[in-house]
Image (cartoon, rainbow, N blue to C red; front, side, top):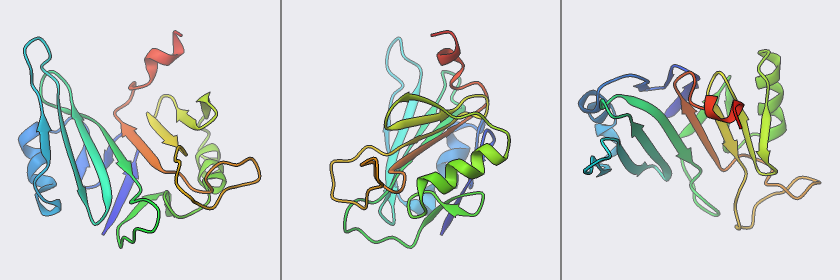
Length: 163
């Protein structure tokens, strides 16, 4: 299976702004997720699950609309046939530097809140290379490929602009 990242619109088969029930129907082939929320005073919900070794969290706003999807690589020594693709590159297998080059070729700006996290404001795309596992690392000591990616609707990272 290929999960296509299309920021800030979708992570195929999920589309930002879709209703909770519609999103749950779209991920039904992945198995039953664990749903957290809503809780008193906190109307947001999250659906957590994994399929073919790829972990995910789908986050919903207070109106029950999908507003973000985060995906995690399967982990050291774990195999998967699922690819998480951005611009034809596999986020969890291809070099992070190549993915960032493609991001910049689109004219998008990459910022780094810390040394292991990168975000693309405006299109709401975030990457991390955090892991304590034994993985191939680049000359700076970072994992060669990303270990998680977050895609969200436009404006998701706007709060960082005011910090």
